[in-house]
Image (cartoon, rainbow, N blue to C red):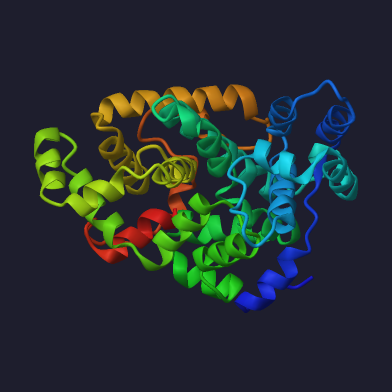
Length: 349
């Protein structure tokens, strides 16, 4: 099936994709749904190892809700809204396949999403204990608009990596050539079409149309070695200070850390997300780095696969090493971090 070239055509094609589920996980969840002794929390915990199933249940539950219902913010809420019988019927419609038969690109991106969820839970869940489920599930599902894209067109992942990360081509130019539309615009359109949780659509709206606060925060975050000066700058801008502390930002921060680490822990993109997260948490960069490295290792212990790349693998390498072929790299000089174009580069990696 050839890739479409317009936003409406992409939505129509991707909306009908039934994501493949690893057969072992499919059977484990099927048994749990038929066990009356299982609580919704226990079933939701079982589904964590199958991100595609989590997305399918969230989408179905939010479609099934009335126009007055807000989107389910966690899988437990979605399961309750949908009910066990309808959840089982949905599961039976999804293809159960051997894990190795799922496209490698799809499994790689879902691993990045699992890493993001681990970062979010480790960094933010204890601080915002009442919102831990929202933080966990929204972080896991933030990149989910891309999952059906890679289920149908897995070759696009390698093409994007090669041209943007290895060769240093502008992400927007590459995306327009490969997809016909900017990638973040497609993600936002699908998230809104599927009625994904508000924190997810908020993140994409911020990246696509309202980068002003993000750019201002990035500018302050650069001065990580002077926390008192950072606080003074935030105090002088109450609107920015209020925006920075919104809980929904945790989802964007966790995914920024995970996606940029897929490139390199020490690349400019990764350092910007680290500094911004440090500003949000009011932590020095060195202390934050220790935490995110620890959570990356925790994620690798839970989710790593021998045929996939996990950034935790690079933590035992010399700091200036890269998994990318250096002879092909043609870096593009970055714009100043405080510019609007700089925000686009930060989120494109």
